[in-house]
Image 1 (cartoon, helix red, strand yellow):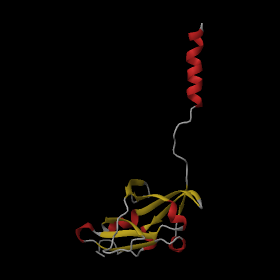
Image 2 (cartoon, rainbow, N blue to C red):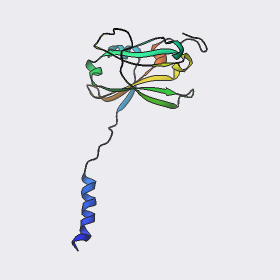
Image 3 (cartoon, rainbow, N blue to C red):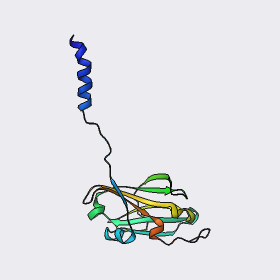
Image 4 (cartoon, rainbow, N blue to C red):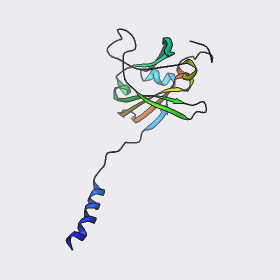
Length: 148
C-alpha cells in the first residue's frame, strides 16, 4: 500500500522543483541618436576580399556595462529572419584603446542592407532588454552592385 502512493508523491515533488529557463526580454530598435546616447558608434571600412567590415564600438559603462552578448542577424529580401550568429569581442583597430569594446563582421556590400547587430543586456538599468541596430540606418550603403 505504501508503494502505491510513492510514485505520485515523487512526481508531485518533481513538479515543484524549479528548472533553469531563459527569461523573456523586451526587444526594440535603436536609431543612431539613441545609440549615441548609450555610447555606441557603428563604423565601417573596406575589408579586401571579405567585402566591408562593420563594427560596433563602445565603452562598458552605463547600459553597456551590463551587455550580455551581441549577435549578427540577417534577413532575406522580404524581411524574414535568415541567420543569427553570436559575435565575439575583438579589437578592430591596431592599438585600439583598452577600454573600448568592439564587435564586428564582414559582408558584401549588397547584403549589408539586410544585416543588423542584436545586443542584449540582462539586469541593465532598462531591465532585461535587447536592441537591433540595423546597419542601413547607421552607415550609407553603396548603390547596389558597386564596391564601397
